[in-house]
Length: 243
Image (cartoon, rainbow, N blue to C red; front, side):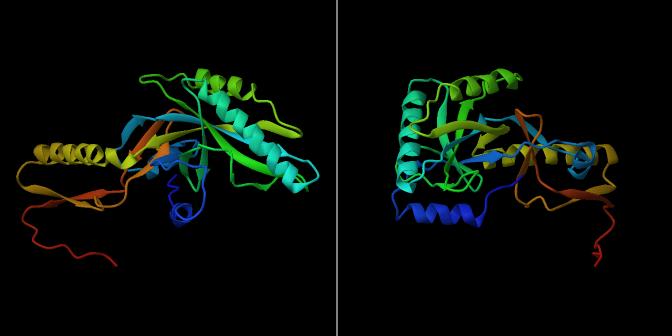
C-alpha cells in the first residue's frame, strides 16, 4: 500500500516552524497485507522481493485523568521513561507514524495527542521498531522482542501502555530498488525477444510509472511497477491506440 500523501508533506512543512519531537528520516511503513491469489494476479509478471528493514508494532499511551493538563503530563512522563528504557536497548527504538512516514521520536515534549477510547481521555500513538536481521524469516521472535519490551513500560499516574494491532514492516528509501526492478523487467523482455528472433520486437508501456510495494509475507516486500508490454512484428511501423 502506497501511503505517502500530501498530508505527510504538510506535516513536514509544519515541523519547520513549530517545535517537534521528531527527527526526520526517509522511511515508509507498509500495511500488513494478505496477498491473495487475486491480488497477485493483478500484479505484473516481474516483481522484486526484498526483506523489510524494520518490524513495527503500534503502542498506545493513554491517560484518563480528569484534568487535561494532568493527562498530558502523565503521558509525556510515561513516554520519557519509555525513551530512556529504549535507550538502554541495542535493537529497539521509538517512533511516530505521520501519514505513512516513520519518524524517530527524540523527545516526549509536544507530542501529538488525540482523544482516547473513552470521553475525557488522551492518547499518544507511538511505534516500537526493531531491525529485521538479514536472511531471517522468524517474524515471531522479533514480535516477541517488541512485546516483552512493551511489558516493561510502567505508566505514570493513570497512564497506561497498550499494544495495538498486529506487526507491520517498514522500508528505508524504497526508490533505491527502482533500477533493480527495471533491470529485471528489461532482462525478461530481452529473453522474450531473443526467443522470438529478429522478426518481432517488444513495446513496453508504463515503465516510467511510480514504484509501488506491498507486504509479501510479514517480513518481505514485493516491489512492482504496473507495466505491460506488447509483442509486434518489426514490419509494423505504427500502432493505433484504442480509446
